[in-house]
Image (cartoon, rainbow, N blue to C red; front, side):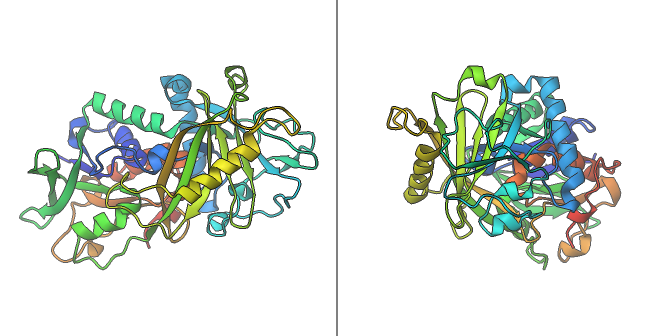
Length: 419
């Protein structure tokens, strides 16, 4: 029987398992993750912003598919209550001393240059009076607001709650979770075809050979390391690196339950060269703040084991005071802004700035290893989503499952293959 092992139980891995289980026995799907705590990196500490059409051409169909799948799943499964799904209004905010947003970039140029994600938006409507601005944003004389989303094209989720929901759905269906556990090596059958993966259980210190004819590596920033360890004679290098990012979740008395009924907001701004904070209001009271990023922060052995940078968090705290405090001239000294969570995540960024959803050719697996042809086998890489992992997660799960199972693809992802 065809069996599938997914290495990495982050949101990409669990999304793929979820949609795989619609078309094969769930018990034949195995999720493997070495982290002591699941969703301890980007899947749990991202901002949860979801966009329909903010992508490079090669990603556009996947983005639209994923956006509609977020909406569909939320409607079908009670997403507002279970993982905070909500329509969102997106704005670009320029403080009185800022230059605002004057250019448009596609793909990941904004990310590499430390500028704002808002530069990939497809809409720009001057909103000087700030009708689209959220009530929780501190305004100042001489500032500028642009609305950068049309109705029904951006949304918001709590990524940790969404990840946990997808995992629980998988487990309820019968998908098998090995956690914390590590894939040690692959084994082949008498024909030299991939047949199993040796899994070491960290809790019991036992090793088990798990049947595997289809292997999916969806381990985030750890994907190149995992692939190289399992296929040591391969010359293929998976082009994924890390972009670390600190974040805060804060409570503000100006983001109220009454305002939630009108929907969430995404605010993109620029405070200094190379520093473009993002703020997202969440259903349930929190406001997420991020924008301090680093490509040099060492990637830990497993998710959740890195220490936060106090300077990065201090910068975000200062931004929270500047943008979420009482209105200029109002009473208070910002003591009503309460930090409820500090975060550090490692986002997997590909060399092209686009996600990778691809089968690895047998010739790239190294000497002595091949896979069953067609939908009966294969080694696949799914990752490199950068800051769009949550937004593209469900569409990626749909398409990755279709690719692995040999079904017709719901979106054109030919430009996302390994070359």
